Amino acid sequence: MQKKILFTAAIFSSALFFFGCKSSSPATTTNTTSESPTTPSVPSTTQKKGTTQKTGKILKLGNQMYLQESGQSPLGIDSYSLDLSKYVGQTVTVSGEYSGDTLFITKIQ
Image (cartoon, rainbow, N blue to C red):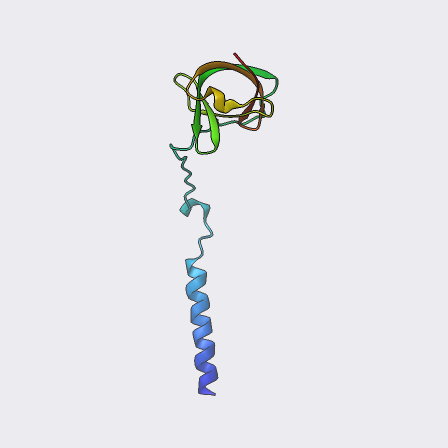
């Protein structure tokens, strides 16, 4: 009988302890977000539409290609029809359309 009482008291105490740890007030929680400064990306809130023309230097970081425009963050680029690796290190003018945050290149000048 004494074991049952001890066991029940332990469960009850644990429940009170863990219930007290739970924060139910939104005022006591903080929601912090941080962006990694080393990840090149273009923040977007809406889908970009139509053909876009940009001028910059083609960069290759790992397996991903980027267009570095003057004074801007590198922009992720890709192409189904062109070999972008031929243009690495060159400053070019590209035309293409966005899919998400990636500019799919259809023409390089």
